[in-house]
Image (cartoon, rainbow, N blue to C red; front, side, top):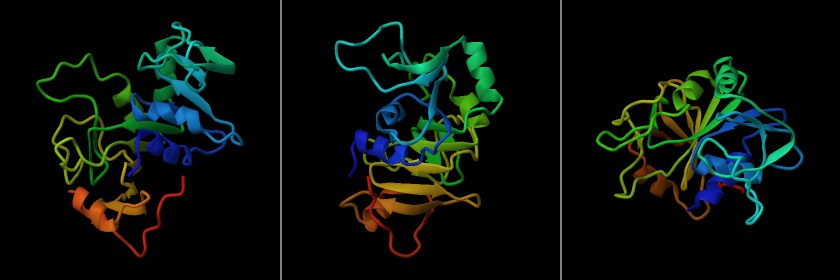
Amino acid sequence: MLDKEGIAKRIAKEIKDGYYVNLGIGIPTLVANYIPENIDVVLQSENGLLGMGPFPFEGEEDADIINAGKQTITMLPGSAVFDSAMSFGMIRAKKVNLTILGAMEVSENGDIANWKIPGKMVKGMGGAMDLVASAENIIVAMQHVNKAGESKLLPNCTLPLTGVNCVKKIVTELAVLDVLPEGGFKLLERAPGVSVEEIRKATAGKLIIEGDIPEMII
C-alpha cells in the first residue's frame, strides 16, 4: 500500500505543463514537493497566492508565507500575493485547470463529501464548494477505507455533500480509479503489492474491472 507521500507522488504525474493547480488541505499539499522539473506549473493557494513552491526546509520557514491550511510554504520567483476576493474570482471564473482535494467519502457518481462530520465542530467549509463547482478537473487524494476498515468509496455519500457529479479521478493507498460519467469506479492501476481482490473488498460502490490491472509506476 502507498503512504501519504506515495499518493502525492502518483497524483503529481497527473499534472500537465501549463496547468494552474489548486492544492487542498492534507495529502494534496504534499504534491507540491513532487512536480516534475521539466514541466511549468503554477500552484494557486486559495488564501491568495499564485506561484506556491514546495515546503521550506527546517529552519527556513517564514511564518508570513502560508497556504490555506496554515502551513508554511515557499514562493517561487514571479509569484503574486492578493486578497481572497481575487483568489475566489479566479476560481469561480474557471481559471484553475485542476483541483486536488482530500475527501471523507466519494460516491460512484462522483459526489464528494469532504467538509463536515455531523456533531463535530468545524470552522467552515473553506473554499471546497467553490473549487468543486468551478474546476475543469478534480482529482481526490484519500484513504480507501476509514479507521474501522469501512469503505469510503460508496454507492452514495452518507455525509453532507460538498459537490455533486464532479470528481473525475481518485488516488488512494490501494488504487487509481476513474469515476465514469455513467457511474462507477473504473480501476486503472493498483498500488505495488496490492491485489485486485483487495481493492474489490475495500470498495463498497460499483467497481469496474476490465482486463489486467497494472501496478502503479511512481
